[in-house]
Length: 210
Image (cartoon, rainbow, N blue to C red; front, side):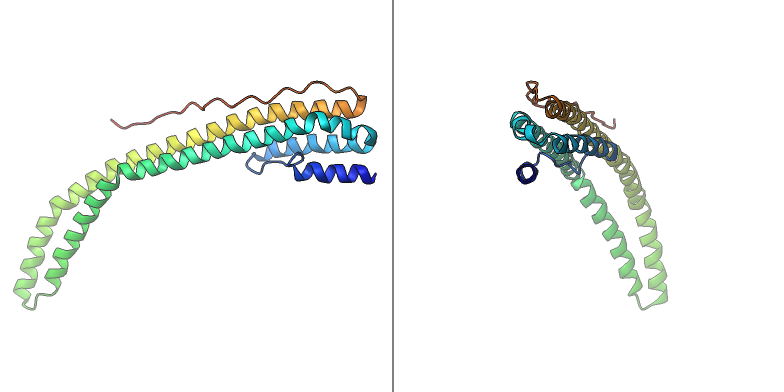
């Protein structure tokens, strides 16, 4: 029993019994159940644990590492796309900001007029001049808001789709490996594990406003 305990601790330190937190709740639950079944088989068949884990632990660890790498790529790609969107609209943001500051500045000048005649005349002229600028800001802001929101939605969709593909591949590979490990622990007959394949690049959906 001591040898079994030491083996479990060693395997846990290698990530064999870890469940990636980036998986959704149902996937985490399914993985936890698979690990629990395997743990029970270990307790029932301690004499086969070392032999069986020697066959499957490397594959399980490799599947964990491959998933974490693929998931990180999904997250990093989304972050890069968001930065690209911000860079695309940076000039428009500066233009709208400058126009808004100019309008505010013109009214601020009027507020400092001492003569009531100059005061009201200044505000009349500033309000008239600001109409065109305000309409321009409204048009640009509305168009860019729609564009940015569309891009944000597309990026989020691609991120979720990419993550789901990684999760599905991971679940298929690790579930197979844990089932084979569980069978080996029960029967003493190992099945050659399938080597995890490299994930294919996710298909991205692009959204552009005309």
